[in-house]
Length: 274
Image (cartoon, rainbow, N blue to C red; front, side, top):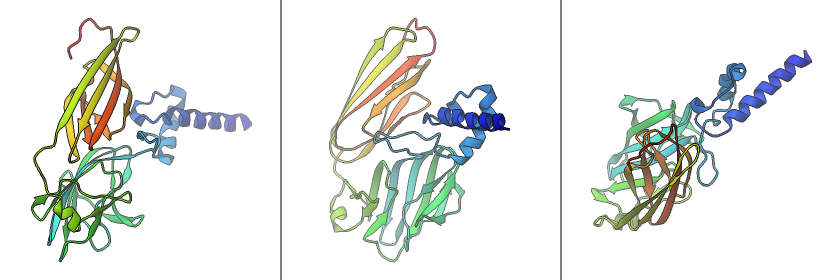
C-alpha cells in the first residue's frame, strides 16, 4: 500500500514539474508511464500551460487590440485574443454598460457576471470577440480588460490618438479624450539584426530594434523565424507573439524597444534565406 501511494505521489510531482515549464501542454514531452496523469494534473491546474509575461506574471489570456467605435447612443467592440487552455475571458463594459450581442467567430456566446465583470468561457486557441453597447448618453468611462495590449478608440466618428486607460483598466471617455483626435501616422523605425551561431544545433539570434512615437499601434513584420527552425527563447518589453508563419506581431507604444529571439534549426543547415 505504501509503495502504491509513493508511486502516485512520484507521478504527481513528475508530471507537475513537466507541465510547469510554462509551454503549451500539447508541446510537453511526458514519459509513457506518466501520460495517464497528464490530463488529471492539467484539469486541476488550468494555468500550467500558460506562458509568463516579461513581468513574470502568468497570463492564460493574451489580449490583443481592442477596437471600440462609440457614440452617444452606444457602439460596438472587436477584441482579438489568444487563450491557453479553457479559460474565462474578461469583456469590455460592465454595470449599466453591459456588453450585448456578444459573439465569438460570429457565433453567439453567453455572457455571465464573474468576479464583478462580464466574462465568457472560451476554449484554447485564437479568437475574435465582437459585441455592442446601448446607452442613452456616452458614459464618463468604460471598464476594459486590464492586460489589453492596445485600445483603438473611435468616439463620435473621430479617432482618439491616445486613449487614456489607467492601471485598473478604466478607459476615460470624457472631454480630455475627446480632444485627442487622430493626426497623420507618427514616425516608426524598425531595424533587424541577425547572427548565426555555429554549433549543434545551429542557432539564429535575431534582435529587433523599434523606435516609435505618437499613438499606440500594432505591427506585423516579415518572417522572423526561418522555416525549419523553432523558437528557443524570447525577450521583449512589448506584448508580442510569433505566429505559425514565423512573423512577429507586436503591440507598440511610444518609446524605444528591443525584442530578442533565439531560434534553433531542427536539421543540418546547408543554406538559409533571410
